[in-house]
Image (cartoon, rainbow, N blue to C red; front, side):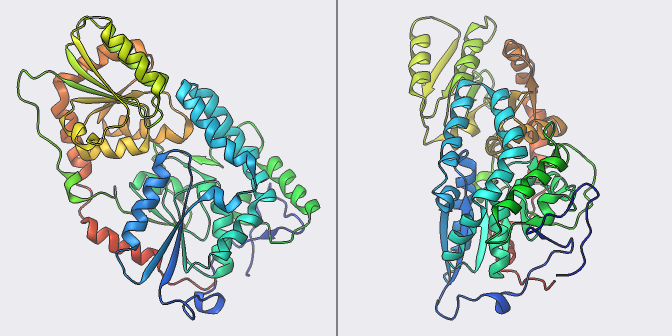
Length: 454
């Protein structure tokens, strides 16, 4: 497979394949072809259930690829590729519970530290072969992923099959397990592309794979070498790169900056509200609702100086809906509160709102930029959402707070300056000159690209 460059702290493990840095894969014609017995080419798009953004991105990719009538698209939840691993099925539930309770630091410690440092190599040695086998059984002509954690196995399977592997990150700061050395990347912003290009490709995540049939002794040696190399105290910068880091990338991973994938109607934010109209404040925490929404609404209602209409989007959190409904019916306040579960007209509400207060989220961030809606978010976020905080502060399209007690005063300072935030958002939207149709053609070209020979 060519020469290899060994990292000084990474000793090759017997039975574990060491990959060259100039990683390439054989042409599809040489390694695999489904077209002998299929009239359509087949793309498999894999997503994860850790939040709605992964599924939404996968559905968007499916719609774009199905714009070609000769393409068949299979959408697959990553856990169905590893359906016999109960630990993975319970992780999403634990994450949702921690976020709903507002225990962000604990969620970060469990999922964004220990899962990456120890959980990923355990998954690689116990379930990677199974994920590869299930994907190969689908006989894809191209593989795409909006997931994380599975991409090492997905990329290895695509390599074995000789088909293209494409990854679409749904967050802006990047963990290594989102990546694969054979993949190409579809990024919303250049900042994410830079984060991807900063990873050290001589590190073991990128250099090694576990071939099918490797003995358990060699798998355990791989795990021991992984822990020895990465350690257990920190993930940055070997396993994590921030979107807010302006240092240029040095590796050769191919990234395509495509902007937010939305239709033309999403690029027409509403104008300023008529003079004298009450400000409209949206409070959002994704479909989970939870303590965040309740706490923020309580702070707003406790302010004696705020005169505004507040819309609390609680998702499927019926307890939050009940608590806020009781709060608003039991007191009089210059703050009028509307409490909703899911709102079918949410895009329209975005365009009529003055400010959104939300838990940091890449999905929310993209939506408010397109809607021209200034954002107020906590300065502290789980590691996967730090990119949202860093880009908001760098682009000055909203504000952050460190304590919920600061929300009323920061909001009061934002309301007279809404035009400034909207003007900056317009500048960010103007970066994307291509139409959705043009971007869709680019995505299809990346998906069905010809593969390089090693």
